[in-house]
Length: 229
Length: 231
Image (cartoon, rainbow over all chains, first blue to last red; front, top):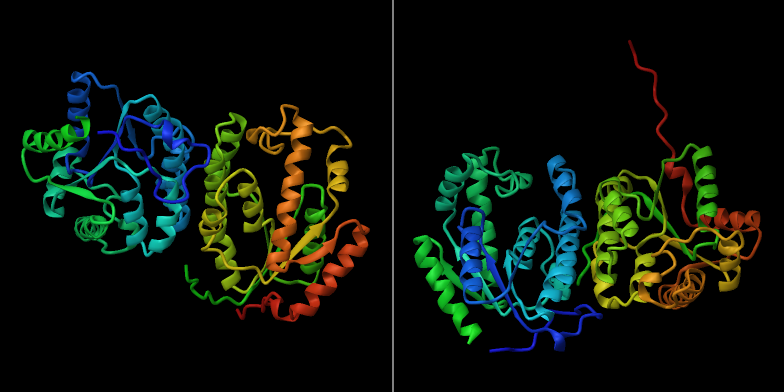
């Protein structure tokens, strides 16, 4: 099933949508939701079926990923600056990885997309209309999955993996609580609420992430199969 | 988008114009004059955020920017200066002098092919300056000032990325021509304070000082004199 690609808004003038094929598939979900594991499994499943897969994620551009990481270390950037920095990182990958891959008919698997970036902006008090228009240059994916996991379970997964909680994933910059633990729970609930608000508008497939890796993977595959036939 | 009203005690003065219009010289002289009166003055220029600038210059050197990322990285730079310096200093009652402001992005990014509404939305968080001076100069005069000593033009500066010409100097001329046109219509739309930049430097500076001191009660911006501490 090939549908022609679209932009959310103003788009990118130099990109010829009629030449884009392939599939753009997005997996969203918090840290500890099993997102990366599922991306890996999907990648080998698709490659096994003979599809060429390109993986994309946030903060992985050649353009600004280093500077963005450095800026995060110092916790010196304000809300709007941070959002624009992330948007730059995303735009670079969209134009240099995603669009060329789609033009070559490949499958692009995105480990997070603009929705995480929008949610982060909005929970920091940012304007919704502003950030939506900002991402008007983004392509509408063929499918978006949101791995939904309760923050109380996410925290376990994070402890299991790193024995600690990440400063940003806990929203510590928001000053919600002095306790990293409490802040993580509150922040992840806020993010989850934003995702649920976006659900309809952006056609999320909500995937219950509180199941075995295998069960989740099967759900994802079943939905993606529809896209591929 | 509805703009929130931002309360601040300072004043924001921006200058815009082509490369070679002489706006930076004029702003420098204005700054000197204000400082000599012991006023609270802060100067900021385009593309100078400590955090973002290294990414921008690296990207420019390697010619990695598209019109979209060119626009976004400059907006990031501006946002950083705006959130950390321009706005706090305005709230602190400073005279903030900006060598180029959001209008530079309006004209450059749209000339590069970005959508006008999209670019204006990007910068929608920024307050409108209290005064914006546009240093208007005929295209040929600006080009002469820049090109007469055959400088080494940079790729993006010459607009080589939009493919107007394969010759660096020809590309620069054509690109500046388009920027000049865009400035002209923006100036009409937003009622910039237009300064005739073909006049002598002293004449322009006198005019600038007169207009500023008529519009702003400069005595409000004196630095507080430090009182000797009682031991």
